[in-house]
Image 1 (cartoon, rainbow, N blue to C red):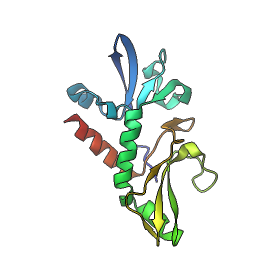
Image 2 (image 1 turned 90 degrees about the vertical axis):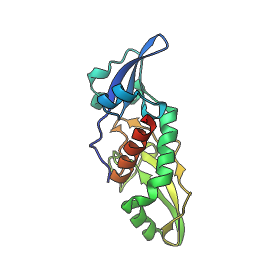
Image 3 (image 1 turned 60 degrees about the vertical axis):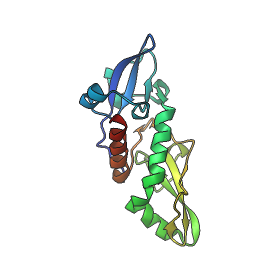
Length: 169
């Protein structure tokens, strides 16, 4: 189960001499006090796309993912995916050997045909248990699709925000 409680904020900043709109989950007061680390920027809005127009209407072709955030996200998931009860339950159903996919909660039909852009990554299973250090990111996962911005299980969402806050100190 994902969380749709995350707020994303758009910040206008100059990158060199160009005004850019950066998307981040960090609150405005935090960003003002500490700034935005590269890992805290989910991505950039296309030049000429105005942030105040509403992120819920944002189209994927108007958004550029930030590779530093994507790396940070997958490193966090690799460390913390094992605390997600739903993933552990799925592992117990796999049997002797296989893989469990971590699905983006925004996917319209998690029990049906899940598009590859909604598979965040996979974890290996042996004897019904998750194998440590076996998480593999899916290079086809997208932070923004026509169904909206990525949504993590609540445990991973909390871990992401906690780790982002740690980058600010």
